[in-house]
Image (cartoon, rainbow, N blue to C red; front, side, top):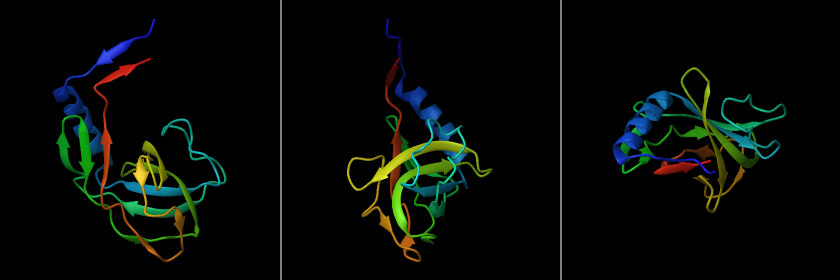
Length: 139
């Protein structure tokens, strides 16, 4: 039998506010396609992973929480550290602990970039990024 948990908009808002608090002043690390993202953000970054860019998350991290969606403030603009193709992204808290792992690309991925081919020295920022907590979870 499938279990189903339904969440109210208020419950989702409280959960997202806690998520925002975890991310305040944290870091977004963009990794190359050299390795796949780990199974969960609690897992260590796989050996051989290459950080292409590291962006600081604003404090407060969120600009709006509405109807189960959190919209984050823009990150800092930083220079790309290493040339490569972006494959996945980890959002970390201010202590460097993994909080969220995202896929990244130019289409329907969770983080959308104008292009995945990043070049050393070019500026990069996440001007707009969001996360939606679904109204129900089934397992």
